Structures are given as structure tokens and as C-alpha cells.
Image (cartoon, rainbow, N blue to C red; front, side):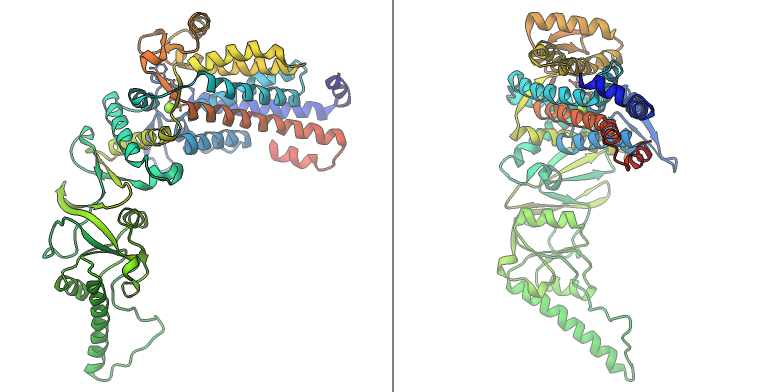
Length: 533
Ligand code: ADP
Ligand code: MG
């Protein structure tokens, strides 16, 4: 056998070193997994993260824990990257991903100890992944209206108070529906839904409003507080006096000089305001400041103005009204104008807020209420997760049974699939199958149930009633996950499987590279060794 020949060739330190590197890497992965294991599932515990400056954050979210931790080990970093990538792409399944990588590596190490070469494990894992991805498609169903809410609700399970999760799952679906007609990719939900925190009321009074709401008021209160719509222009700059260059010197030798400057500045502002008025603009949005004289000119021209905007808000306004961002007012022409459907102001928590509704494209504001910043932050995070999943579900509506069902099923499926494959890869596929069981095992463990009993019962019940039987932690027993409404999005499960497998494979390859390089005698393998230790 090839492996045996290599065993002989690499009998000395190089060979030991290769395995040592793997052992180290697996250890790093396990410690990382141990750090977040207890957060998995609805019964998962929260972690309190304390920053160097003493500020604390309480979270139940695996990826938040990992991204905040200061981790230096390259393998641990690789796992964190896999988890972050899961978060970006699927908005859920981050803890699962890390647990899977760690378990896949753990089982791989067992095989290597038995004498299976890492490259065989890599092959076997690749085959297992491919088969698992095909199998999940066979098990998946398409979510109906109710299930869409349930699946979003399941992804929030354990993240916050359950009434809050109910509310935010509903709001997220509502927002995702409003965005469903638009294109803009996975990030649309971040760009089109403004999150606004209001320091008043109860978090359960949080709501979703159409349009963009901002904590600001018009620059002059003599202009109307509300409007039923009109023409809007956006200046991506200011309406201010031209600033003198630092190096410029003005020689003031008569009182008229200053007056002359002033007059010219006013003339300049007047020209800009006249230009806007001639275009029929009645609502002006200015990114920077507006000079006092400019304000009174605008009032005279019947233009209501707002100033000082964040770039993202300006872009959202541009999208929802169709107005282009123009560098300065004089360069605005007919084609740069947009239209809005309404504008109103109201006082919330003694702060003036303005709501602008566009005429095209979805734009919404989630108004998060709550008396403490921590509560509002947590609620905002819950919403971010919820809408991330809800939005992706509109284009990818496949759902899978949660509660460890899909992983148990895949494990069983892969075990019966393994013998169809040649050679030692079979062992790797079986190791992969066993690794998937980390999900039901950890769910059970965190819920205070015996993991072995749960796995055995799941396996038995699935062989009787199929892949949709999972472990319902609320009831403490197995049941049909479709009926229980414990559902995981297909795209989350798919991404977690591929992300975890890829990460595990790249760790296994680290070892493989060391071996291969020593084998062909490439001198620079020592560098590799140095950087991996
Ligand atoms: P992740 O970061 O991986 O998304 P979570 O802490 O969100 O981790 O846990 C997700 C897991 O919890 C999924 O496997 C999901 O099916 C499972 N789960 C959610 N609710 C329940 C429940 N009521 N009973 C059993 N399992 C559940
Ligand atoms: Mg989750």
C-alpha cells in the first residue's frame, strides 16, 4: 500500500512532525469549539464578553464570541474565518460550522493515528460532502407562508426573549416581502432597511415603518412640518460660504472689502437657491452644512431643507426617490431630481424625527425602542439575523428539519453510502458521518439530555419514520420537525456543510503539504513548519 511505503520513508522526525502539526491543529480547533459549544441551540447559554476596556457584551451568538476573542493560532483563525464567512453568506449556522470543523478534524486525526494518510481523509471528506449536498436537496421541502415565519423563528431561537423573537421574525418577513421585487443581492436587506434606535418605550413596541426615518428636523421651523410629496434634490456636499484656502491672505484696508466678500458669498448662495427653485425643488437634502444666509434664502424660495446626513442614509434616499447625488447645487439638472411621496415630523423621546417616503424602491426603517442601549443593541442584532435569513429565503425557499434531524439523517445516509466507495475513503466517509452527529449531541447536551440516548432514539425513529424526525428540545422528545415548526433553511445547512468541510480539508492539507514537501525533499519546508507552529 502507498501509505505503508510512505510510513517507511517518513519514519523519522519528519513524519512525526507532520502528525504533531495535525495534533496541534486539532487541539486548537477543539478548544475553539469548546468555547462556544454551550451556546448551540435554544437551550444554549449566553456568554459574557468583556473587552480590554472593561465594557461587556452578553451574547448567545457563536460568531460574535469568536470574532471578539483575541485568537492567534492559525488554525483557530481559520475556523473563525469559516464562521464569519457563514455569517456573511447565510446569516446563521455559525456555531454549527465551528462544531462541525472541530469534529471533522477530531475524527480525521483518529484515522491518521490508525495509519490512514491525510490525503485519503481529504478525498473521503470531499466525496462525503458532495453526497451530503445532494441528499439535503432530496430531503428539503419548499417553505409555505407559515413555515417561512417558523424557519426565521427557529434561527432566532435562544437569541433573546421568545416574545421578542416572535415580534422580530414577523417584522423581518414583512421587510423581506417588501424587498422581494428588487434586485441588489444578499446585501439588499442591509442597505434598504435603516436601523434606528429610539431611547424610549419598550422593546416590544419596536416597529417597521415605510420610508427613511432619521433623528433630525428641518433646518428652519417656519417651513412646513409635513408634505404630501414633491420634488427632491440631494446635494452631496454643502450649501456654505466658499472657504478660503489656508494660505490665502486678505488685505483689509477698507471696511468695504469684507462687505464685498460677504456680498459675493450671498450672491453665490442666491444663485444656487434660485437654480433649485427654477427646477421646482421643494425638498432639499444636503450632506454637509447650510449657511445661515442660505437657510433664509431657502425659506423665501419655499424649499424645505435638511442637513448633515450619513453617506448610507443619503444613498438610501437616492434609491427611494430616484434623485442623484450631486456635488453641488448649481450642477443639478432636471435628470438629477427625484420624487418623494410624503414627509412628516414627530417628536419621539423629546427628539424631533423626520420620516421621508420615497416613490420608488423599498426603503424601510426599523425603529428599535427600549430604555437601555444593551437591550436595543441586542434587539437590533436579532433583527439583523432575522432579516438576513428572511431575505435569503425569498429567493431560496428550501427548508430542512432542525433539531438535529438533518445531521442524523445525513449520518445514516452516508454510512449506507460509504461501502459504494473504494478503499480507505470508506473510512473517511464514515468518520465524516459520525462528525455530523455533533449537532444533535450538543443540542441534547445543552438541553440537559443524555446525548447517547438522544442519538440512539433519533436513529431508531428515523429508520421508522424518515428524515424529518428530530429532537424537540421544548418537549424533550422526538417528533416531526415539520409539525413542530423546528426548521432550518436549506441554504444555511448547505453553506455550513461546505464551509466546515473546506476548513477541515485545508487544515488537513497543512499537514499534507509538510509531508509532501519532505517527501520530495524541497528545502523550504522548514518555513512551513515555522509558520504553522
Ligand atoms: P447556529 O449559530 O449554528 O445557528 P444556534 O444556537 O442558532 O446555532 O442553534 C441552531 C440549532 O438549534 C439548529 O440545529 C436548530 O435546528 C436547533 N434548534 C432550534 N430550535 C430548536 C428546538 N426547539 N428543538 C431542537 N433544536 C432546535
Ligand atoms: Mg442560529
